[in-house]
Structures are given as structure tokens and as C-alpha cells.
Length: 113
Image 1 (cartoon, rainbow, N blue to C red):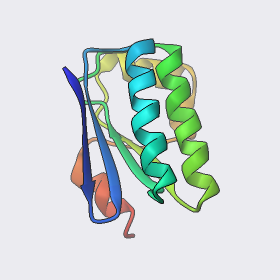
Image 2 (image 1 turned 30 degrees about the vertical axis):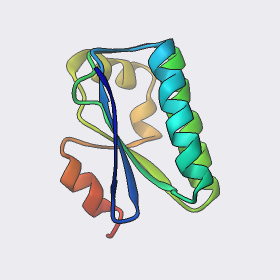
Image 3 (image 1 turned 90 degrees about the horizontal axis):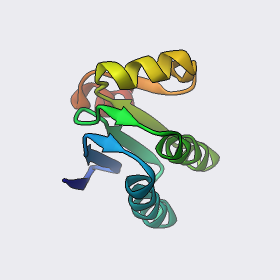
């Protein structure tokens, strides 16, 4: 398992290919995203379709990434929620904070609308 990084036009797409997104995966993602943000990427999509569990450390990386992107006029969008991850976002009311999509193409198009 790994995190796959793609650039589509000027959008950074991080595909989380882990069942469980915990401290180790959070550190990997944080390092990858920080490098790209430093290079000027501020439109970011994180695809969580494979993720069935997410801990608070990983969630914190998502929140911090959203803040970094917003500071430079960008945004972070999330794609594909498994039921347990969706429940966590609903319980913490983070659906109010993040733009969420069921499909990657819809999230990409949202940056151009």
C-alpha cells in the first residue's frame, strides 16, 4: 500500500491507498503535500476511497493542509468516503469544513466552476 501522487493540470491529487490512515501515513502525506505546497500547488484533492479507518493524526493533517491551501487562495477537496470514515466526518461535523465528492472527476471540475 502507498500514497499515489498525481498532478492533473494544476491540481495535486493524493490517492490514499491504505485501509487504515494513522500516524505513519499522516507523516508520509504531510511530507509529500508540504513539498508540493512549497512548489506553489494550492489546489489539492485527497482521494480516500480505499481508506476504511482514519485516526485523529491523519485528520489533523487534512485540516492543516486545508489551512495552508486557503492561505494561498487554494482549496482542499476530499473524494470517496467509506462508511466508517464518513461517520467520523459527520460526528465531528467536518463535512461543514471540507468540500466532499463521491468521484474524482467531479472534484476536479469543481476547481473550474
